[in-house]
Image (cartoon, rainbow, N blue to C red):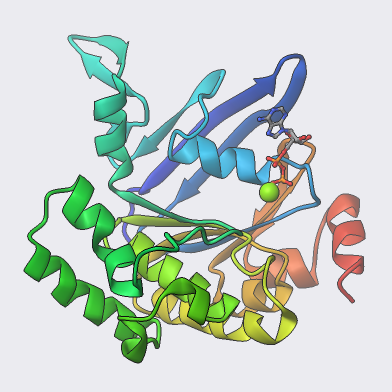
Length: 255
Ligand code: ADP
Ligand code: MG
């Protein structure tokens, strides 16, 4: 594994009014690493992911993606806040998949996937379509390019959403409870797609309650509670030999 982290979060604080939701998060994610974040509802997992791609503004702290500080630029020793256009450019390196897949209902699967590369990033249509077909093979939906989202199951729609997020060739993928909205019988196909991506070396930060996925696919498991990282380590460290009572209490719900 490369020595230089792809994501370096330091002392990330976020509050909504006087409600402190993130209380100083430090996290490094290395290239090719799969980091699974676990934690009870309301512990700040989604807020932290949204800070990583600047969907939320932090109140304190820094997040570096490679050598770029999210939302800021260093010029002649001074830190400047970036305008929205430049923030959008930083976001190109980051793909995100949400619980709600939100595909465009009036567009085919293929159109959904090429929309950002062609419409936003100015890739040629031919190249975007070629890559979209490759991504559809990756997520196991080669035969669905011309289907409309309403004709797909929830699991298929989420796999299209994953292909759509990959279409901009991100260096980092963020997943926020990607299987939580799915019927139980459709969870497996999405997790297995994510496992394939992990095996291909994609750098991923995954918020999920799927402990089995964490055990099998994570290089590192991070347990958050109350806006803090309580502990982190290998899946064996955190899931089998947790050191903190709060981690044990959380995990006991899944047995
Ligand atoms: P998790 O993803 O771990 O369930 P969240 O990051 O969604 O947690 O939320 C953490 C806390 O922040 C919760 O108490 C939630 O109510 C609060 N929160 C999240 N987003 C907002 C917002 N836009 N405005 C006010 N409070 C928020
Ligand atoms: Mg959440």
